Image (cartoon, rainbow, N blue to C red):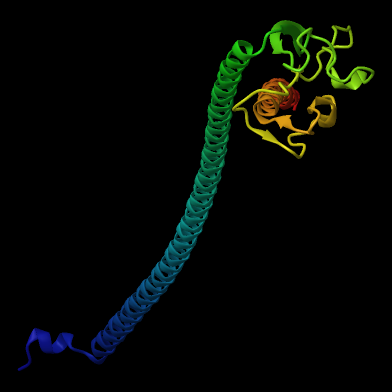
Length: 298
């Protein structure tokens, strides 16, 4: 005898169950397919996102490298400019130092030249001063010797007269011994006026060279005399007119004339040099002032 379940498992029920099972299987297949598709889409999306992220990372790194390269280039350019500026500054400082050194050397050379010139002028002035003093001493010695000889001559001569010594425009009366052969003081050679030496007179034509006119003692004993003219000067009377009848000339008197002329000439030369130095100093000051004025205008 069959059970109720057996009766229920009829063919129609089996078919229905099979249909339900098929529907269930198809549903599961659809779900599985949908799941797989969703997973695939998700994987694709993830892969795409990863690719995009990787691409973005690559781009970022590329941009970063580019920025680093640009920054490095900028720094290198700044460093190059800094070095160029330092080089130009060093060159300018070197040039300025060289110019300052040359200017200092020039000033030093000018100062040394001025000092040497001043020392040279001082030495020359000192030399001239010593030379003038020596010549004046010699002139004084010769003058003293002549005075001593003339005093001795006056003691041996009965008559004496005076003559005029002209130095520039100054007159001085000096004693001149008259030859013993003419005790009256006349001309030892009457008729020959050139034997007497006349003194110069003052004029208004300015200072002349000093002239000392003294008549030689024809009969003086102990005085050195020479036969030939010496120490001739164009502004004095010819030596032949100053000689005695034997053609002898008093050497001491000629030396005195020469020394007085030399002293006078040295004084005149020194005066001219002083005037020239004053004029050159004024010109130098004027030129310096002109240069300063020109510099201010520029």
